[in-house]
Image (cartoon, rainbow over all chains, first blue to last red; front, side):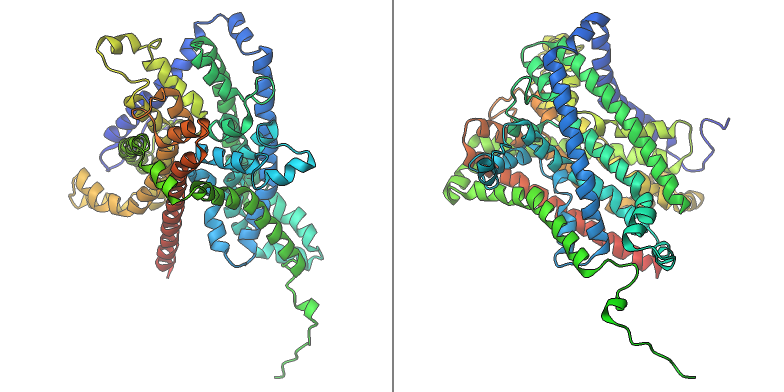
Length: 277
Length: 290
């Protein structure tokens, strides 16, 4: 057992930590605890019946399904984009690299209306998909498109630095031992970047589950079909159903905390893996 | 001594750690196609839709009194939220990076918490505390002070969603810089604040700026959390993203995209500044190694 705080000659620890804890408590912890305390006023059967009505269950299925599909696509293409940005040279590479962060910087409402305009029946992309019988805007497919946009930078930005650190010597050794490029990739490079890829996937998934702004414009928001859980919370709030909205938000919070824990474990795994090589 | 050179066929000249040319170009093409479809086209379409009905409609949309009041409110909220989180970020990073204490990892996780909370839930929790049905609601309405459906609620929700940005930029930076320079200053007789303003602040100013730029982009663009606490009162509690939503839902697409184009421009400026600082940092590091 080491002491609460190791001695240091630098001043300001009490002030800095005190301010940090006060600020975090007032802005983050006390308001967050309100959701749990207000939900505790409900009895367990009441809580359970609120969070498992058919309409709510349908929203979970949609939110998780679309988020999972979007995170999966982002894992695949994010890995490809990271690979291309790290390994190859092509004109405009720096510009492309900078723009990958666009979904982080672009307000979600702007992304929402832009994607809706593109994928609507008369939009730039929608007009080619509609004759093929593929409807994107105002269907669950549209939600998937919006969530793919939102999650795009996560995998690229977690895999990119790890890929840069993969040592060329390892690949040369693999080649000397007779491995072709595909074998070198699957046996040497991929295992090194796998934890980072999983972290990026989990981050994109976690972000997608809570996403609201970009989805509501393109979703169509039909109960049972294209209604995501965050929207259901808003709907309940607008009907002054505070207990219902709070109960649902506690479910979302618990899921976020579990995902946060998983992401922390993945990052720890990723760091340990890269410090070994 | 004689040097023996082996004539190599073009195929053999390819390095063993590189893919064939056609594979390289195929991968680049697929990656660029994906990014074009999901990034570039949506970005371009914002500006295209904004100017589709002409420059006059565009100018009319962004000089509309409701739009101007939305722009003003967005700037005001960011002007409060960003400095608050800068102070918090510096204080948190000072405690975490310069000292060893128990529970540090838990504290870092708590700071990151708002990133993993859905924007809608972020707004809702403030309604639960300050709303009429909430803990402080009755007391606030007695004293005629509105938080929810008013500007203070919008500021609070914005501060909540942007809490981690600056702290998580500064913590690794200050950890990497260590404590030696500050310790030297203290040993030489500098006070705590002198040490901070003359040693620490100059060392972290680029990281602080970097975090502030990202924080600002999110503060101005936040939609879900602000939407819950705002009440959508035109000309009074509408931020720019909420104004975009209202115009869009009224089928006034040209005006919605006009206001949206301002936010898209903000995003592009943010990315440009971010890239510039990253470029500067890399050069700085290289010079440090020489």
